[in-house]
Image (cartoon, rainbow, N blue to C red; front, side, top):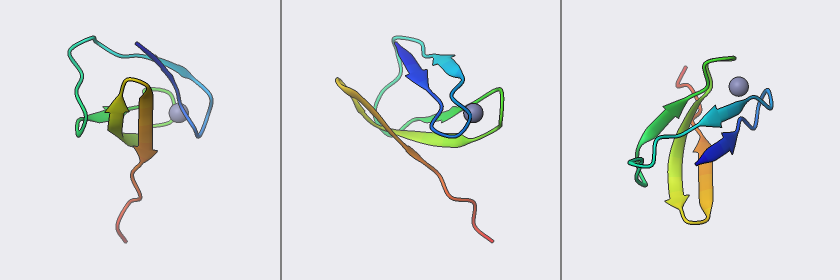
Length: 50
Ligand SMILES: [Zn+2]
């Protein structure tokens, strides 16, 4: 699976074993995303708590 980082546009390759609820981190900008759905792929960026 491939995912485009919503922040920097970097293509992130996801292992096929990823499931909804798991976290993905963009290696380019460090943005954390939670996988909402895997088919079709949908992610939600995590907001850092202040
Ligand atoms: Zn990014």
